[in-house]
Image (cartoon, rainbow, N blue to C red; front, side, top):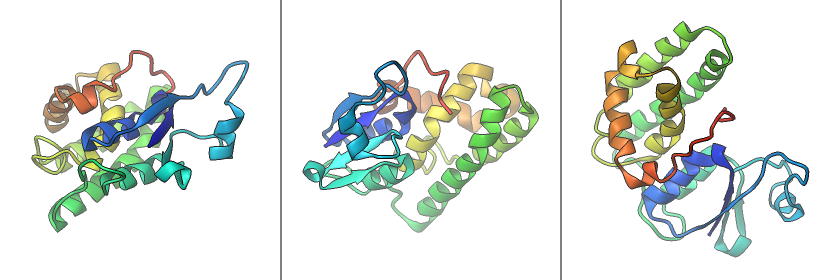
Length: 193
């Protein structure tokens, strides 16, 4: 399995690590004088990352949420990282839906907009975390989806517990102590939205 990315593909990278899926990662420059290589444009004419290539190139996924779902359901070896029962499935879906609502609010706040809306939305996310991971004892795609963004918010504005997000604080600490997450933490991330 090949995984083509840059730093904004962190959630898919976490999912590959958490599921234990064997993969080969190839980083793609988003910018620069040479741009993306021709072979990459053939994989994904939209030019977006990440791209996951499975089954010797027979299956190509070029959307990070779709990639999470595919990895979560046991792509080419590894463990399933999807919730196990209906309660966990609903919690994970609610978390990911709320996270997707949060992203434009968070981006606006990072770019100088209203941070009060961001903290209000984060408190909603905080209420969905079961602990130690989003759905309980096991890592799921919800954890993979949320970590890059919530870790960056904590790094930029934190600590999140100062804003009433104690569950997010505990969850971030649990995630950061897990190799699947810690391996993907990069120092340069200004382009993370």
